[in-house]
Length: 143
Length: 143
Length: 143
Image (cartoon, rainbow over all chains, first blue to last red; front, side, top):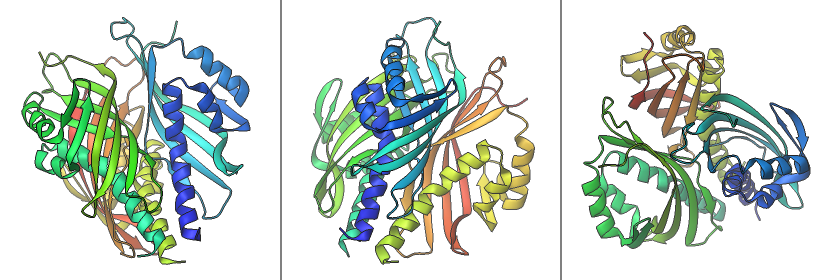
């Protein structure tokens, strides 16, 4: 593979990572979510920092709270130097946490920002560290 | 053209296809929508599968129902091997079907997912098969 | 740098420009917004055309009107020929102009489209001309 083809292939893999995250979490395929993170990944959110194992457990429990979800992600802002084994992405997301259409509380909608540190691990790009920031939130939190 | 430049050029063409679709449908330029599909393309939606000709006719008729639309697409998840003549994209969209600002029903907003099979045809990338899935819908359907 | 690597590097820089714009304007870092435009850039909006200097001054004043903002941008539709010193992007955006969560007017949300002419300037890609179009607007304008 030429350097240029490797560069493109890496960028496509990096760019697709958060998109694959969205699809896995929205179809509640938490095992697939796990494959997108490094085994020792850390996820940092409003309630502190969790290792990936407990974080995935939390996702499994949380998925029953809403009827569905859709993580609509903008184009990531990618920082990557050709040939490097590390990269970072900064991704805007609108997260629709969906209740049943006739639920009186309506949906919960969040404006989020994901700051991901990615590494090449066993030949694949994975998320080694994610920090999430909630920019705004509209609608009723789960009671 | 080197292999790498061809690879980039193909990826850019693939990536732009759904964006061009959004702009054509939102400006109600249905003839341009037609150029983005293979002449024998099939579109599969909630009401079954249609050939591209009847599908475009349906779009022409439907465009009078709403005052306007905006198809806001996330970054597509692209599956493409350098040099191949086929590709697929999986694209999240929030579709705003707009009524007049003072219409009592408000707007209809949909969370959609487009699964497109693309082929190289006469030197251009076109959509050979599209499957659409509606993830959520909020607001009043046309009466 | 090979032609292919230069091509990729240019595309990534072009693609990132509107994303960097969104982050700078949403964090109210108007000085950084200024670095993304050519010193003689023009911005064309509903109220006419402004040079970049007065335009940035307007942004500084406007930022006090809302409690915050989020400019969620779709994938840009990029027009660029490898090696050229000019490019253009056409970007869909949903702009959330946020009031305090308990404000009775709620938020102002806009569907926008940015038509940017980019040029290579001192080794960087910058916006030489931006035309903005508002496709839709929902919520209360600042009184």
